[in-house]
Length: 192
Image (tube, rainbow, N blue to C red; front, top):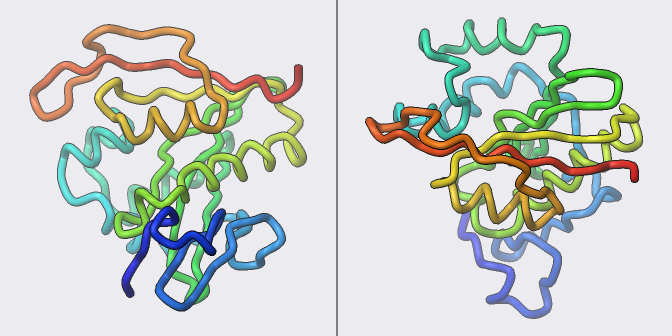
């Protein structure tokens, strides 16, 4: 399926274009609302993680002992974790993310991932915006935190694009591909 960037198709603003199949990206479209993550999508999600670098950028040190469908399904059983997803019209996974409850007022977004062939089309911002709306309406949290690496420019652009602000930088805190990376701690104030 050929993807076209939004800016390449003027009549397709605020949409992701899959050739002639236009999929509107809003909360009213059944195919692009947030859904509870379905464990049947674990193999598809894990197929996006091809290298140790991918794993480091996506999960930090969460899966230092390795990653498999069984290990990941055990991870999903955590009581403080809610996994959400978006799928396309053919029920293929488009986006994945976790909301980890830190307290009654604070949660953290973790392991946000967009299907590799759908990156660069605005889906990450739509997905993160939908996660924020879900946190507002369903969870009542006042603040969302997240960590990302300073070298993950796409993630930084996505998060700042939906309103996250950098609150601290931990220098050379995570080793990825033999290079010490800075961790950027960001927050989003849900209720002011």
